[in-house]
Image (tube, rainbow, N blue to C red):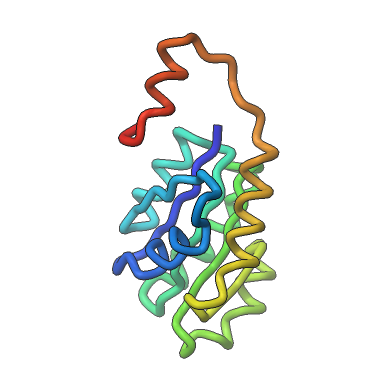
Length: 139
């Protein structure tokens, strides 16, 4: 089962995405570094990741995205950024980003893409106890 993971320092994109998702029933998991995010992917290799692009993580993000199809072929990555990083849009798309945005007020297409991806992820067979635990709000 996949997760919706938002990798950013501030929490502003995750908050905006939660608001956009509304009643969709998707939980947003947050990570504060690319290393932490990739560790989460190792646990859930069918996830959808939203990564905030900043000047300090550009090189590391490109390196990780270059290996993504080998390490986690079922993961999809969307990139969000401050308006000053708009010029990086096509570089990120070439690296494999399925979506790029600089506006936290225009996240509807991103939310729809994430929802579609996660709806297609097959649900693994679970025991009754596992289903109950996974349905609890604290996971």
